[in-house]
Amino acid sequence: MPISPRDRPSPNHDERRFGAPDMLIMHYTGMTSAQAAIDRLCDPVARVSSHYVVEEGGAVWRLVPEERRAWHAGDSGWAGRRDINACSIGIEIVNPGHEFGYRPFPEAQIRAVEELSREIIARWHVPARFVLGHSDVAPHRKQDPGELFPWQRLAGAGIGLWPDFARAMAPPETVTQIQGALAAVGYDLPATGTLDERTVQVLIAFQRHFRPENCDGLADDETRRRIAAVAASV
Image (tube, rainbow, N blue to C red):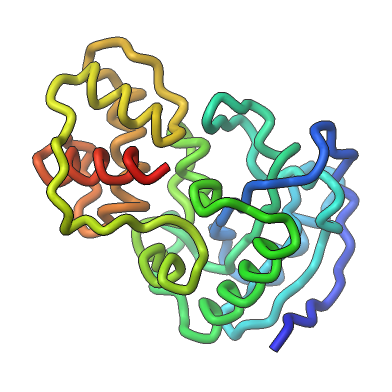
């Protein structure tokens, strides 16, 4: 059934500059409670917000109208875009995060995220390749929604991208090829030809999304094969 969100208006938004949104960004709140997170997202001093918050029990709060530019992504980039706030809708999912005791997302919460996301995708025609985590668009500074977030399940429900990793794919071999394939997926990653800190951060972000059982930042055979599969799917 359709989501009926509760309203808690946040002042932290402004006008969209590039027309209708076509991206959906998942976050975790990374705070000790839902109330603390909502209070901060509605605090004009904090200058941060999202469009929605989903509590662990499945309750959904609407903080910013979808037509407005909420301030949730910060310094970020994807597929050549720099102002991710201007072209995205942000969902904050209540979870203490890595700092305060990261834990699995409850079933009721994920069901609510699925229903809310399907409605957003239908309203704004969001492509699967543009359903992303905060760590995808800001790998240099963010970890959320983290390796416990069920990306594969959501993709099975029509939300986001999860290729058939059983297909045989020719993986990128050199660092330059790996960087090029990750950039083709959408990650903001220059081709330096060296396994620098930025590349390792992007590898970890990719693994959190597409290989959550192993988030070590190493470009082993399985990670490179999955990079090739995702790049071929976008």
